[in-house]
Length: 243
Length: 169
Image (cartoon, rainbow over all chains, first blue to last red):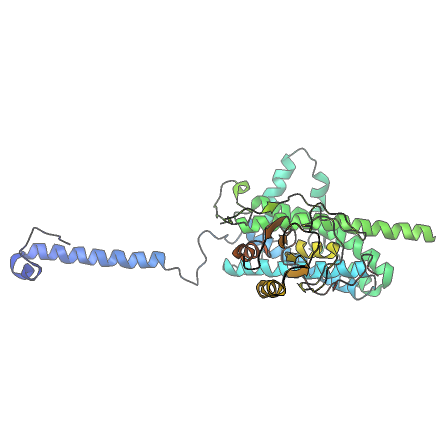
């Protein structure tokens, strides 16, 4: 490497290079060292800071990851309640399926927020992150107007599709077919709102894994709604034939 | 490989979650997830997805054939299913047991299949002649709890050990 005019050798720098040029060389070395330090700062990721490509506070991703954890937690609760209150093997299987699948998904959403260095709890109103999606739906042909009316918070602040405290108390007090019927009615409504939330998240997210998760979740819950409608139908038919 | 994008149209986000395997696998898309409590006549043998029993099969190694309708539900939850013809030599079966993951995987004999070994996941399938074919582990790595399974990570335990009747008993 050579900065200055050709010299007879490295050892000869002291003798042959004038003072102003030696100062220039020192400056160049200082600049190079500083540049190297900056490079290290840029390329060595600080483990306490989130990646700049991650969602930030106020994003739809953060809102979805928080609200869907709360929404899912109630589905887990209702599934475990009915599993303790019926011996029907099919209802017990679907309840086990919903409880374990949704608890596993809660873990995924929890981990995203940790990875993104965002708190699990926010002071934002539940569902506020869905506003851009709701506006888009309002501007479309009005096909979703019925859904839009259903997607508002209840007076007690609970999210769309969620059962009330009274609903949960009733489910706790029932046994057998009565518990199964109430469970199906509550869980179908719960899933319907869950599908709308997931599809809004799939539209608004900037993260490929969140989009895949939301689309997969929406499709799975649509399939479960069909299964639960069929189970509901079985119970209505058998009630009619018995009565 | 999944690419992250900022802004732009989220419709461009790659959500396949699938890397590029260096070999071909059979792909079947748009499989039904409907629950039925009756026997199902599947298009593939062994089946790769479609209508299934509400009660899934517990993941694990089975020495005898297991009901299609239960194990298809396990694949919906992200399990891979390794099947082998009953005439496969014991050393090969032992080698398959060794590469079968302890969770979210099922190993069982299956008479009606076109090659000595078949590996299936929801919507994806490959054939192999030997348990030492390295593609088997690559397939498992790609599709176990991944690929296009509708409910990856839902339970693969606590349900049927293969003896519960399809109508729930």
